[in-house]
Image (tube, rainbow, N blue to C red; front, side):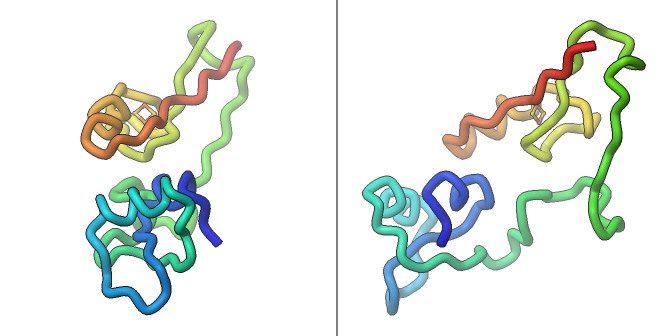
Length: 109
Ligand code: FES
């Protein structure tokens, strides 16, 4: 069963059993109250990754920390960056639009 956190992160709708499909705002309110009893993906959302390297079966990147050019490099965890896998700050817009709280992974050299 999805927790409110993973339902939000995965952009899933959350609703009680036998309920009509709910609006995302109602789903979030139910999740906050702990009324998460059924989870389904929203039609057309298709997962957490909206557009990055969709032609690949799985998006995987390898980083050798010792080869980083900067002492601290931010890596995207919101899947909205135009410079993926690096963070370009797009998470700020995503967080404002959705109420989410995602941010980058900071890798130290
Ligand atoms: Fe995705 Fe910053 S742009 S975490």
